[in-house]
Image (cartoon, rainbow, N blue to C red; front, side):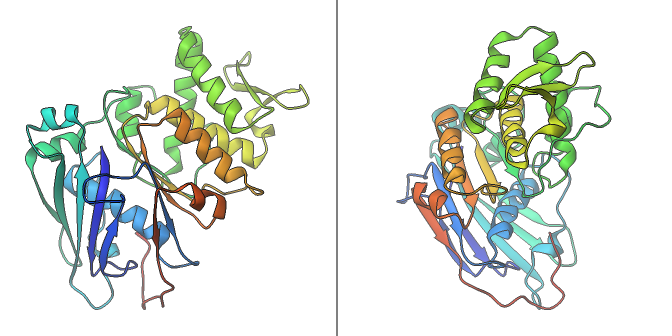
Length: 314
């Protein structure tokens, strides 16, 4: 699945109008950058997509509609045109790959959605297999942490967290790592090792230490735990671990500020690694990095705006 177009009306931090995620009326782009000055609404545009999808076909809970409504308005509207591949069209039972879904956010009642039931069935599917396209969100608050481990189904746990900003979703990486190492899933282990090494050159994922904690080999040859990773290498492991854990293929992937902790063209190089590793995905990226912007097939540029009174974070 991919996104072809978004129509916005009365959204809190996005100007009214049409936002195209492709170069034409029928061809969605593979990488789209959302650019603009600080506080122009880049993050909010990503979160509008995530929230509209959750209203229409939820993985987790219902978003707070009031958080998406412009000050002084009673409701806001987002119409997303989704593009389905042939397998998804067959699953949905539709003959047109372009399927619109209208979502209305209300200030004083629950949001509502209107879309073809087949489209909604496609959007609500979730499993950690490459055959199932998903929508995934990497907010700027992304950090792998060692904490209490979830003992049940990893896909079920992740389904409720993937479109949130909750950093607990990255804890699932540890369960995934333990599953592939202890289960001797050599192909999955090599995929994670290769993707992490490509994102963070000079680093290597070494497996698990004697107490079952991820171990890394640093550029100087030292074996160390994840706490010894630099911030940039830590980000690389979050992306590599998440993408390998969820099997992101044919999916819409939202990334906020890929240049976090990076500089000197490194953000663009890493984005190219992700594009090469998962070429079937659509990457929608909020960024101010000129190198990342240069990679885009389609660019959405947001203007400066004056914050409205009493604005709430979504």
